Structure formats: C-alpha cells, structure tokens
Image (cartoon, rainbow, N blue to C red):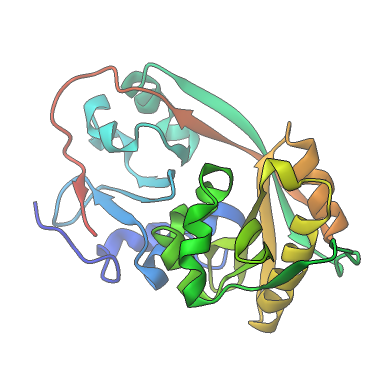
Length: 261
C-alpha cells in the first residue's frame, strides 16, 4: 500500500463535494491544511475513499467493495456517508448510533456581547499555543482538526477570551472550505454565562466574512445551549441531517483501507 501526502490525495477525492456547508467541508479542510488522513481501499483506482480529521469522517464510493473489517480505521468517529453504506457500517461496529444533527448558517450580525472587566477577547497568535494547551480537556476538542493547540494558534482561524495568560473560551473554524467555514467553540465550565463564547464567535465570524466565506455551525438537536448561542450570534437553521457514531469494531481481520497522509 502506497501512502499519499495529505496535500496530494487520491484522484477519487472528487467524490466529495466542493463548496458545501457544514462538516461537508472536511475534505477541503484536509486538502488545504494537511490536518487529517485520506483512506482508500487500494492504492490504485480506489473504489472507496474516506477522509478523517478530528474524529469526523466522510465516506464515499462503492460500499460493495468493502468487508466490515475494512472499516476498522473509522472506529470512534462521527461518520457521514450515503445510506448505501449503512449495512456494512452496521456489520463493522458493535455500536452504530444515529445522531440527529442541525446545520446553521450565519445570516445576520451577532448581538453585542459584554465581557467581564479584566477579560480580553482577541484573535489567536502563534505564541498562544501553550495557553491553549494549559486549558486542558475543557477546550481541547476544538484543537483536533488543527493538529493540536499549537496548530490552531498558528492557523489564523481562532479567537479566544483571556484573563491574563489563561484561556477561558475559544472559537475556531473546525473545517475550512472554499465557500464555508464550519465553526466550533468551547468555554471553561467555570467561566460560563459571561458571554465569552459569543464574543469569540463575533470576532471569528467577522474574520470569516472578511475572507469572503460564510460561517456554519453543526450541532446535535439536543444541544439547546449551543443552538441558543448561535442564534444569538446571527445563525439560522439551514437543514437537519443524520450522521452516525461508530463504536468498537466487531469483525476481526486486516483492513484494506490504507492511510494516505
């Protein structure tokens, strides 16, 4: 099996949409930034291709070319694929959980946010990596699609609220595409209800608009706090959809999917 650099994916990458909103921008993000992994069922003329970043995966191609064990690399991921892949996904994993999702697009300006005295909200700088790393698991999941806190700090795609050198909240573009940037934010649980996430989102989405793109937000239907936040930040519902979370692999055997990044 021959690996391919992230910036030179297999030719079958055209199976993924270009200029689509939400987590559909994942493939464009990996292609542009190199933060992610391409997977194919064989090195030449692949019949199936997947792309992963930050525990999210897109899957496309011919599902009849796969055995359940071939999907082992997608364990523990949120997978988006056509319904044709559901039988082989269900056979591959002990748990395949459908997750109702809501996709929002920013349509209006955010409401004004007042932050506490002594708190600074600004665009991330390369030297902010250690502060983001020190924030721990409360904020850490937002870094995953940038290779970690240092990668996000260098990316130019994040804003954070700081008190002195401590990061209290972060908003960033999880996936960057040609037309859309799908955003995420997180606040330290001890610092909630201070409008920090809203202030970070306002700065981030202004940057996204300045790049000529539209900010999107993808969340579960049950995430009422997140839905209220993005409504206040000027986002409106675009559509609802379902993706699937995968549990442990149930079928043993060697995967024919090959890492290509």
